[in-house]
Length: 247
Image (tube, rainbow, N blue to C red):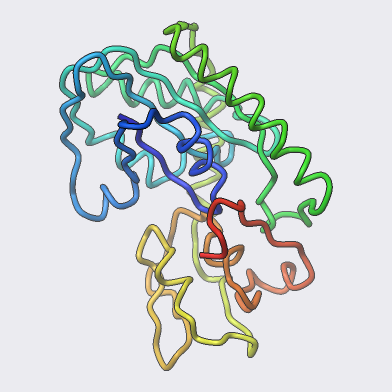
């Protein structure tokens, strides 16, 4: 059983590569929105969590899911956290959250992927993205072998993650999101928003919630690059993992 969360596709790719042919993939955002938090783990099946790091911490929607999660029959539990640089203390924070639900996290793996944090700076594109995707595929093979062997590791770092989480919570406002005249009204931003924070009105997106997870799915996956975050993002690169195929 594998729980995942993705904004621009990196963690979705990782989840698909790690899952066995008959393993169930569960989108944590869908689970939160539907109120589904109780699961029975099939006999001898591992439990995985795959998601990106935010502010060296855990995405809000992942935290909301994990703080209400109920598992039965779990055995080996692991997490693969995707990042553009480092996962910081996010693994330690996840371990703490799960322990409060009587779930023992046995190992955390860091997976370097293409950077999508274009709200802060201009992210790489072209050959650097391609190289990172190739290396990620190789690293995923090694991670999968370690999971199969039930490798256990001491997980630390929650203090740094809690500091990052404080900054993250201050950053979650939706006020700076806006749309320009190149918007074609396709509605993908509203469809892809894990928080249901976007509503189409008059053929244009409107942010109807004061805060969101800040996954950047709306801005990175907009086919016409019409969504901006203030003025700084106008000339910045966008990133979408190929597994999403333009969706």
